[in-house]
Image (cartoon, rainbow, N blue to C red; front, side, top):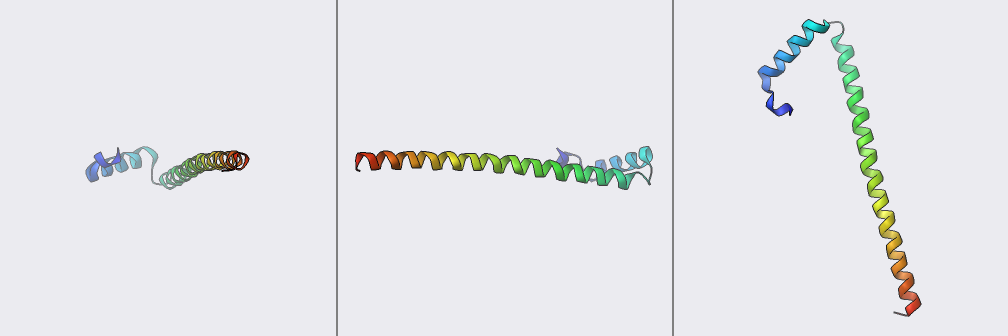
Length: 75
């Protein structure tokens, strides 16, 4: 999405933001955007790790069930 903007488009967006919000508000907006992006990345990372943990637990229980069935049959 951002790769289609290019340098001239990015400069235009920054100039428009400067006109709309003024120079005093831009750092605050940048910090708010940065912290929001940081929280989003953290939440996404936690969701991915949670899914990986669930898969590992499921694999472990399946292996334990297979080992128990093999020990009962004497294989």
